[in-house]
Image (tube, rainbow, N blue to C red; front, side, top):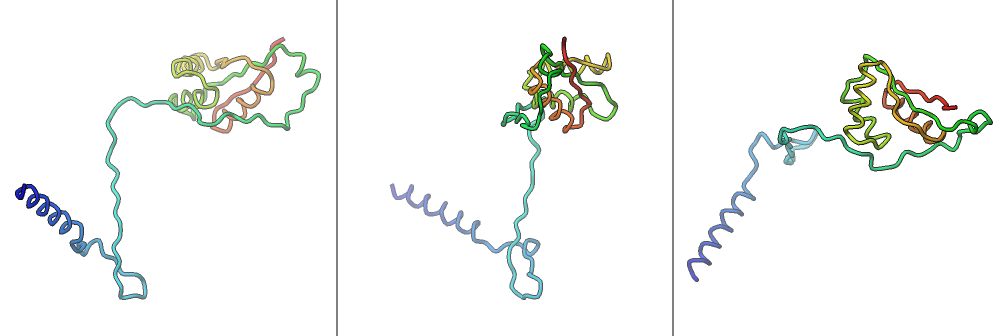
Length: 153
């Protein structure tokens, strides 16, 4: 029993010595116009484990603008299709990530839509009512994608 207590005390003493030892001079900085030294904190970021990228779904829902005015031509449509176009500015990964985050598509659906737009120049993302299609289009345009909506008659 005494051996365990002695070991515990030795460990505590070693831990306290390391915790309260003076900081090396490279970690001491002097405040401007002061002779008083204070320690600085240095952070390092360790690389995470290598692996495939995971596209994350949005944490908040897309808010539909209340400023959208409904006229007779918009209410007669059976639905509105949201289309994206291929461009040379956005990477394929960015396009797929935006589709997942904005529209809530699965990663595989987003990848297929991105490849369709890449190969054919255009892809139909989906068909929604006007307000939802307009909200998705605006959100995709804000992320830098080229998108539009057209009515389905």
